[in-house]
Length: 406
Image 1 (cartoon, rainbow, N blue to C red):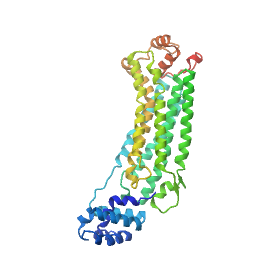
Image 2 (cartoon, helix red, strand yellow):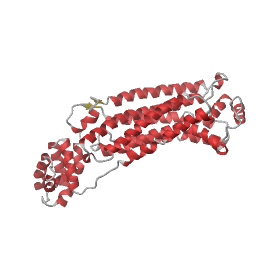
Image 3 (cartoon, rainbow, N blue to C red):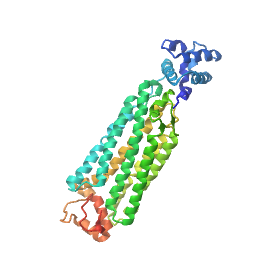
Image 4 (tube, rainbow, N blue to C red):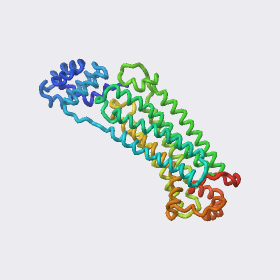
């Protein structure tokens, strides 16, 4: 990854030779200044002119690109940036604050498990275990984002120490793998949840096929992101132009992976919508359930915005600044996805605390159903019973035969 073009934006600051020399301006930059300033309309003592002359900037940029190494160019920019009084940009806050707030999602995972084990007194299902695994990977991703912010993601690359640039690119590489793992676990958890609430064999085949496609997506893009550069270390060492290696077209990889992810998100979130629309229940209950599932489309929206933020992933000449937004929006997508997974369980818990608003689970019979559930079952049959279980999050053991399997 080369960063020479970054000088086109800030090479103007290389021109303050008299002050910069005192700060050991790289020799290549001093030579460029000595060659270009006499050919401009600016006096060598007129700092304002030197800092604002567009033609001079272009000439200096071309010279430095040709004669300076990446590290010397960045060092020169950092020195002269200060000389021309350019404010230091710092957008590291979101990379630290967003994942810190995101840790609140752990509480929702705990409430989900509490509802399952204590409120409904049931064993954990595969979707619960998958959500727990997702929570562990989510924690790692959030910690990684915080470390990125501390290292300087959100600052201009020329203001950072070279060791921090390498550290940021290394952690960003790990974050890519954690991100892919999290979004796939989110989808798998949704699908496992659906297998409990849809008794239809036809629907379950659709769910299984969706799961296979999701797993294929994971295998393909985990491999692609893991080996996007050869050697792998070139992901975080290639920035300085001093190491040998090659990379695939990263922008294409990110856009393709992101686009397929958006399609899978929309498909999986939309799977239960037709059945929910035809659900025989009160309008209030139907609206609550549809709204709960529809919130999942928020993840799709975040995924789309993340793609926009990462559109210059590999071509950026200032990645520690340009990629900051894409980094923390990835965390937003992960955390929101985990929260949505916990919403059905939270609704069940709220149904106990606020039965007048979210429904009541009191008066459960020995068969595990209250009067409203019995009535619902008489009206809607097995599929209706499954949706009641969705609402109550009662993942009961199958004691009634395959027709009532949830």
